[in-house]
Length: 216
Image (tube, rainbow, N blue to C red; front, side):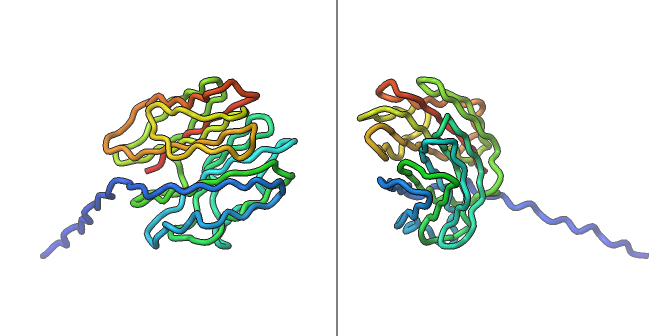
């Protein structure tokens, strides 16, 4: 009599996350709908576009729709400070085209960035998120080995800039004369436990907010 041997499927290690060039764009007109162009020029078929956005309004805003080239995006993390919103979205793998964003109210300018990530285990489920609205903005976040941490920060001040600690700044822009939007992100070969990250505006502002997100 013979007995069948169990079939053992070997586990396949997922390579560490890698990151492409971060592109950003600001739109200096008011409106409810914004089309950001050229931000997905570096997206290849195997890249996951992670999108960061900042917009400000005269009343509490929310997103009505969000797509890349007509492909619906997934909201990963959103936070408000008064009438300013910061959010991370994820587009389908390899998605290219305009980043199209519609809000439920008129927004006073908007800014957007696209971060190409590769080798993600999940592009729709953050492993951790955190936020802070003090001055300077500081929060702790952990990530798995081979993972990624991204941060977005806003400050309402004229002629402003942002200095990041423990995360590499990728851009620093002024969507309007009284606001600053900045982004930072890195991949990490080893696991990070409660990594303390700071975004410090050069000037005191009328309000600020930072969001952090980790992916693997």
